[in-house]
Length: 231
Image (cartoon, rainbow, N blue to C red; front, side, top):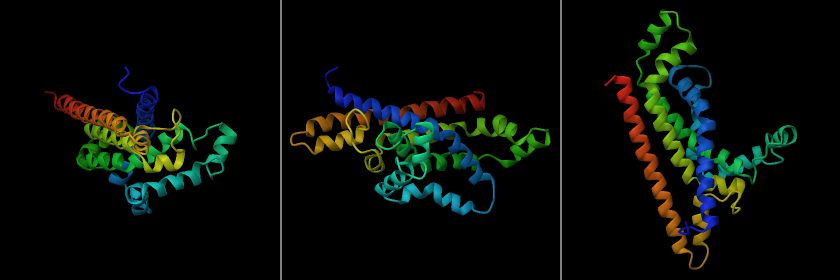
């Protein structure tokens, strides 16, 4: 298709790749953290809750700068990862996925946590009294009941990752074909005289992807709810 240039298609496909990886990589941790915040009481509970939601409060540029300090080639975590495992985040698409995951994580955790809090703890206690361990209780009782919330949280995180701009451009820059995502591509088009038409096309693509994600979330949520209710 020639509706978008090859470089613009690269930005679209990279955004999809980044967002999918951001959700897939952070979902297991998101479920664990949401469960811990919803069900457990421990020293540092309020601190963990604050750290999880910090990306929502901080300016995205600050989050990107902190990621650069931590996961840059000379960062606290970035240096050993690059030296020992050959994993590099800074100025790579993997860094864009990391930035998107960090920015979307609070929304994912918040949505899943609300679903867990809506589950009657007595159902979990009943499974425990029948001999089920904590992990088995979660897998057979809690997880099926919160699955609509997990799906909703994943879709919300995906949408947030698709629209992430500030932390991404700070951490991995805006390199066409390498780290340029859909939002940064729109920004680049708007910096060029006469680039409004190209930016408008990319905006339409972004709107289409967002609507598709919302419709998918609605359909999947209803399908899972019908399956749980047995109707």
